[in-house]
Length: 118
Image (tube, rainbow, N blue to C red; front, side):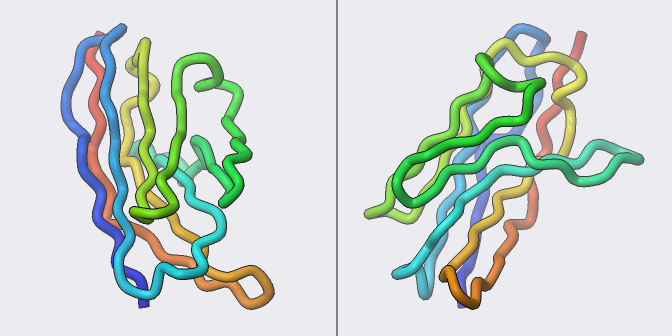
């Protein structure tokens, strides 16, 4: 079992920055993909960015150049640095951790609110 804890959400004015952190604990010896998703009211949950165990990254187009995902394999953590925030970035942000490759298990955090005011 893996336990996920997120932190770092909050309120910020447009153009500001926030950093989200996610820490995994428990059976973390085979973490594969770590990712951040977000869900705005009335919308589906969407991928923001993910990062593989080797450091390869993937971003949704709307955050490219503004957000940076990073991870520390030794600590089983993944961060999301969000710069130049826009009101449309307002959402609940969720950390997702995938453990294993051939038969992966997926774990989600409880979510952290990010609110960007115009």
